[in-house]
Every structure is written in C-alpha cells, then in structure tokens.
Length: 106
Image 1 (tube, rainbow, N blue to C red):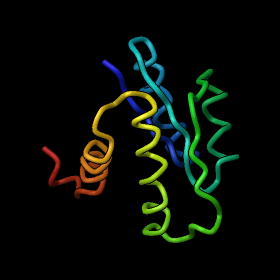
Image 2: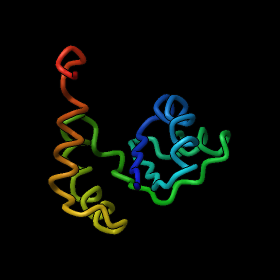
Image 3: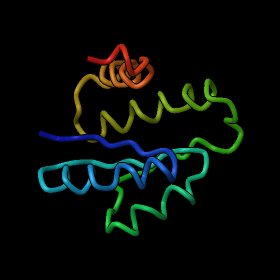
Image 4: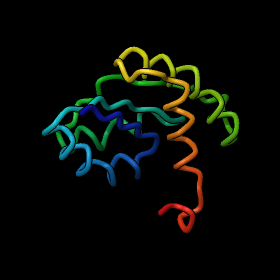
C-alpha cells in the first residue's frame, strides 16, 4: 500500500510528522506545498523526514480559493508521477473529504 502525504503549512508538518513516520515503515510519498515553502521545509527535517517532492504555488496565490485552484494541476502531475492511478478522481475525493464538516465525516 502506498500513501501520499501532502503538507502545506508548518503546523500541519509538525502535527503530521508522527503519522508520516509511521507510514514510512510501510511505504509513502511525501509532498510539501504551501505559500510559505521555506517554513514548511523545517519541521520535517526536525523529525528526520525527507520529502520526495515539492509543489511551489507562489506568493501571488493569496486567497484560499486561488491557492486551492493552483494546487490541482501540480497535484495531478504528482499523483500521476508516483503511480497513484486516476489522478483527478483521487484528488477530488481527497479534497472533498478534507472540506466536509467534521460532523459529516463518519
């Protein structure tokens, strides 16, 4: 089984580090992204995690909608690059799960 961990902020990197380390015992691909790529690079180093790739969306993407839209193309390429199958469907499914209210997730 393979896992794709996308970390976009420094707090996410810190919170997900134990999960990523556990998944690393099996198999995984970790991609860093976000508007502050320098800041998001630091926490994985603290935990000994070496990201496999990075998506830089640039500082012009200021709003959540613009940043989210800017991620779809690069994410699709990364998902295809690492052999995760139908990229657009997997990205859309993951995005849908992330954006649902907590009470709606079983």
